[in-house]
Image (tube, rainbow, N blue to C red; front, top):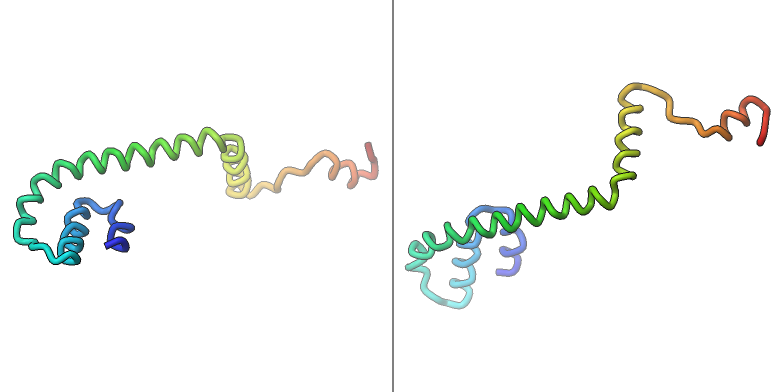
Length: 101
């Protein structure tokens, strides 16, 4: 049942599948599972909302904490796509010209 629950978070109405597995594991009847379907349909909507809001909040936190690094990565990717040479630091340019600071 634990292995089934790990992968069930992203699957709609997966709670019913895991519930049947748990009921079978403890030797309880699964005859009335259709009655639980109506209740689980409603509760599944709340689980989905919670999951989506949690994912969105996690993305927002990562974006805030890593904004500078993400912008730098975007600039590097744009340079690679444009075929431009990577940025050269001033010290490297001076060394090529034979001057030093």
